[in-house]
Image 1 (tube, chains in turn blue, green):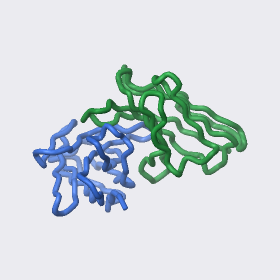
Image 2: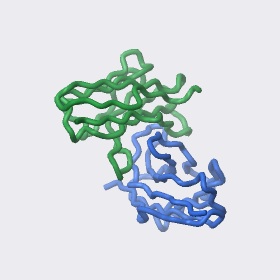
Image 3: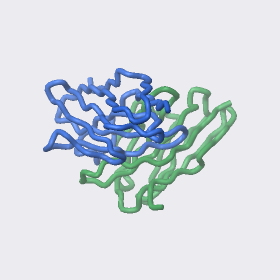
Image 4: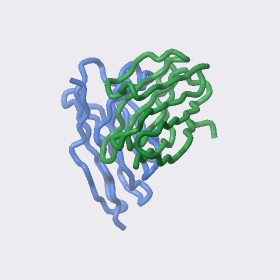
Length: 115
Length: 114
């Protein structure tokens, strides 16, 4: 069955520290992978997406993610976290380049940033 | 702002009442999706349209739920005879098909059934 696992429910990092959020997927076909961010009470904002090609993708707000097919992973990273990055982060997998939109989401990782 | 907009942002209703939500997608997007998100969970797919045609419905979409997109532009999601278990955030998203842009989400409608 198709699924997305985000092993960490809640992560706390210090402002200025590096960040890595984990995502593992199970998908029968070629996966199209996404990271979204959600602030409290808000909708989801697309951070970055992977369709093909270079396995290291750059997104908005200084985020990047690396697709590792052998590990079925698509981890999100940021070299230096800012207080405004505190939010919930969702990894998702979909088909057809993401235009199909019926994505399968993980349960999310809540990021807290301490001063 | 030309993003996806949803109305209302919040809705409180009594159990057994009917509610309707509206979604206006990004204007050039031909696909529109509805998701439901409960506390502590990621969004779950409900249904999607391509233009005015409803192409897929999740088994989560019980017969109390109905969605329409009559002119291929805005969409409505109606829940009849609401139950407390319907309390959730209802998210709308849109995308351009074919395309590689991904889906863009609105800010959601928070439904509370009391």
